[in-house]
Length: 273
Image (tube, rainbow, N blue to C red; front, side, top):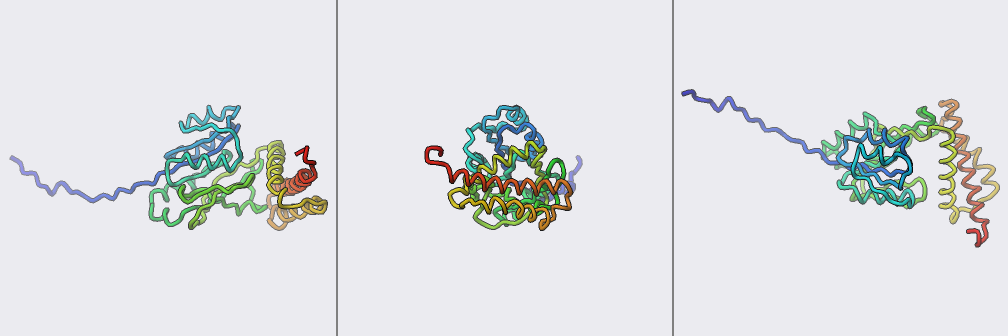
């Protein structure tokens, strides 16, 4: 008979760290050019919620390779679509992305670290994440784009969407902090895309402001050069060369279009409205 010594069995107390679960929410409409890279960057998440406004391209077909939680809903505006996606999320911690955004490798590592260290994660109710913004394939360092932080990681129970037609975002009731590891934002891929977007966004901004601000010829004349100088000179857009000039120019053009469209809305007859 051999005596087996219990000493050979050394039991060590192993601390198992439970990772917090994460829901990613995304809204889409005809985003086949962007959605694959976006979803690829968050495929490690515990859940991906995609709310689609009945895309007519391959957005849904591509998305099915990454998630089975795809919901279609008629487009009712950015804020309402995002609020709807927020309600569908299963977990307390939410990461909100736009289809033209991607989680960088460094941000992925940062998020995984926070999710694995609950005591650090729970110290705040929301995290504003830096965005690296690209224009025609080039990362823009000036124009104020280098200081772009967006509240994108937050507790579902503490969050709500701001009620705006354009430039909507999330707000949390509680403490927030910044994360420097970036979201990659592929904002504009072509001049044609720029024109379409600023026409759409300027219409929404004009509609939002038309009941509060009165348009005038002075605003139409002076706003564009003022905003161009602000972006290109004061916010160092010139360091990005031609790309910085174009960003500043299109920003100024947007401001001019907003004022013209406000004027148009305010001078329509009752029958035209």
